[in-house]
Image (cartoon, rainbow, N blue to C red; front, side, top):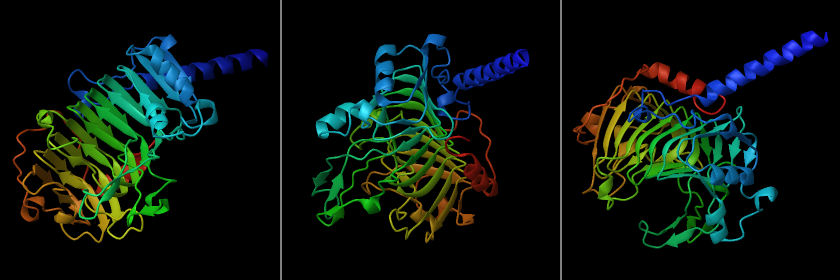
Length: 382
């Protein structure tokens, strides 16, 4: 009995080791921008000594500080929260939040959740000036800025603006963001106070990509309950972004997202097999638009499905959210709005001259298959 038990334990350990090894070796598939430029493998070449399991923000910070840019795999167990008692407690003020909330990843890093319930809370995962990074299988709660700023010149009646995203990618290349979930909940916008006649918005983006970042794939994620979701390109004035911001969004689920899914400036952005679900009259996150075609955007859209209650034409889905004189180009094929062809070329008036072609092969799902496939596969633990 003892020998049989020992053999069983050894077999289980071997299976777990093999499973862990396989997960650590995951690399971005070739069917997206992150598969180009030599590909994206994160910490796949990490030595045994550089494979870690963490369960607190303080542990994670210590590992990132010590490992630098050498290959590493960091597995997240449970909840990483910089405001937990063992990681410093609640943010004392805006300066303390700015210092402690940023989880700064190095190059050649894989950050991945164990199972389906690993969480990042009160944190902004920052990939700034790095290369070859993977973030997978995490439940990411959009951080809430404790000191939103009122801008009376924002819009016709002013607005509250905040800092910090769930993930910020800046000046980086070869990054794969896969099988994560992003949400404002439990601090959704309907639970926020109102001042100056507006919701005192404490959230910024879920995932923003800026400052000339290239070779980025965002795949199999679930984005829900958020207003300003994905920004690609930070400002019309940053003309150095032109020719960069090569980003793929594929097989993602955008559920009750008000806008910016994504909002693009300058970038060569490819959207395919994504499922958008929402309502123009949602109580907390009414749908405004999905794809923002901003200044010199160059967007290729294929086989995306939009189930948006109350949306009547492609103008409800695709628009230029910026200056009327500073728009971009988008081409679409195979996409549906509430079961009918999106008809972007005929009804929206955007130029279809994007000036580039997709440099990799993809498997385009039929619109009927997109909805079910994304619902079944997007998010952590899948």
